[in-house]
Image: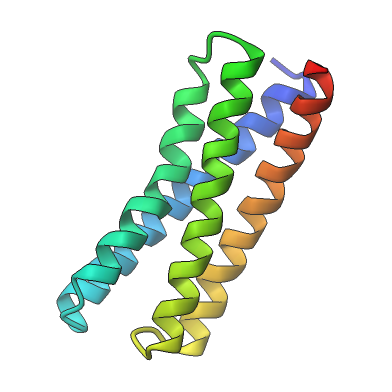
Length: 124
C-alpha cells in the first residue's frame, strides 16, 4: 500500500531492525572485547526491544493497542540512549562509536515520536 501511515511504519520497522542489528553487534563487541556483561545485557534488551515492539504492532488489534506499543518502543529508545551515554562515560565505547549509534537512536526516537503524536491526535 502507498498510504503515508504504512510507509512510515515500514520506515520505522526497517530502521528499528537495522538498529537492533547494530545493538547485537555492540553487545558482541562489549562481551568479547571488553569482557563487559552487565551493561551490555541491558543495552541488548532495550535496544532490541524497540524493533520487537514495532514488529508486534503490525498485529495490533486497535489504534489504542498500536499507540501503546509505539509508546513502549519510544520508552525503550529513551532507555537505550541512557545506556549508550553510560557506556561512553565509563570508557567501554569511544566517542566515535557513541556518536554513531547514539545518532541512530535519536533518529529512531524522532520517527517514533512523530508516529505516537500523530496517532494520539487521531484517537482523540
